[in-house]
Image: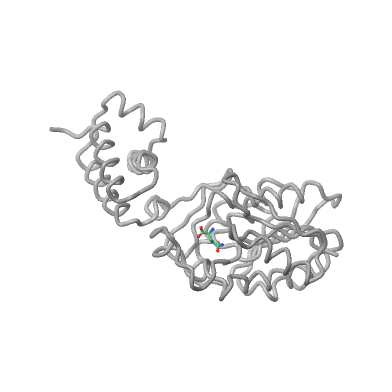
Amino acid sequence: MPQTITSLRKRAISVLTAAGITDPEVDADLLIGHVLGQSRGEVQAGSFLNRPVSQADAATIIALLARRSGREPLQHITGRAPFRSLSLNVGPGVFVPRPETEQVAQFAIDALRSMPDPEPIGIDLGTGSGAIALALATEVPHARIFAIENSPEAFPWTTRNFDEIGAANATLAFGDLADAFVELDGTVAVVISNPPYIPADAIPRDPEVRLFDPAQALFGGPDGLDVVHSVSATGLRLLRAGGVLVIEHGELQGAAIRQLLAADGWRAPATHRDYTSRDRATTALHP
Ligand code: GLN
């Protein structure tokens, strides 16, 4: 019997459910759509209409389903991760951008837009795939954005995304955030970072994270705050008076980060929740 979108979709949903995938229908639609070059809506319509699928495409879909059942991230299989208006290249070696970080980026976008500077400078420390930096550069075109990444495994992905998106107002550097962009000291309007912040002994629940995200992008020392300390010090050096710092963090770290920032001399540290009501980001003003 020839395969149809309907039969493949049914099979995919049952295989992915058995593998413990949280939203099996979403992953089924996106995997099938990836192979057929279709959107989620087109796959669902094709399933409704019982459209045939070639033997070759059906075989590819089944092979990709096996990979996803092994909990390889969907984004590694498709090679793409959506972030705000962007579609980023991702794969082994680079952290897959998360939806909650889209909301964290909004704080930096709003801050850049509210600055009186004709050409406000924004900096993304530890940019990974380049998600935050490229969102800032494309959504605030009058800003100048700088980004730095220190992982040799992640950096080829960063470069590829910067090249592909081609934002003329975005500059990428390889290196440690501690001594990033000294030539911009005291001139920057907004510094943002999604640093590694998971405590060293905490084990991420999802196999996609535990087995496929680079440890360097996840773990931030005994209390998870090692890199946050460094982001605070670098932010104090880079920002001008009244400049805004935005840091993503774990849901239990808001109080500790407010305290850390206050001790470093920041003004008005404030913690913000994500759409699931979890503490997710803290902002502060340069003294
Ligand atoms: N939010 C990330 C996760 O879900 C943690 C990444 C980080 O430390 N920046 O695993």
